[in-house]
Length: 207
Image (cartoon, rainbow, N blue to C red; front, top):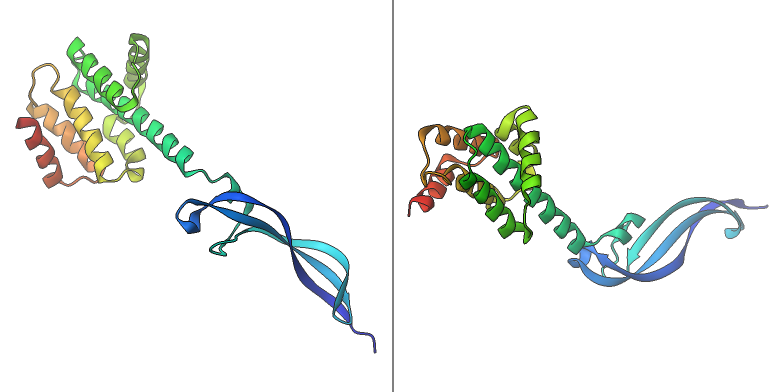
């Protein structure tokens, strides 16, 4: 009696180093594993057929991942997230200045200083004017824009956004007027920041 069939066979491929998510983002050795279906005769794999799958296995924790994990770079991801945050803060400050309706040199300086503190680079007059032009054409205003990225921020990030807007709104007179509070309340609500948290931020400004 002839016994034949098919079964999957796994074998090791290339190996190297990668940043393993399962090991806390530390560099570990990996092995690429390939699973291929073989025709078997008397349970012995003889003829390779189709490839069933491929994965990356960490040699320390033995977790398995798809090959995209080889592109995983936490430092690059953090730098990208930081750059995106700075751009969001810049845009939200400009939207705040436009919403307030009084765009004087004090407000522009507040935007420049905050941007420099966050990014380490200088925002040119051309860049600011370009941002102002875009802000005037934007639909939905400051709260709508903030709601689009608020989900990616922790509480500290949201607080930084609010403090940056506060710096712009209070730049000319050094205090927050009633209509400015309405803007801040809308902004806080769009980012799911509680009124108690907002009051705490405002209290710091008055100290």
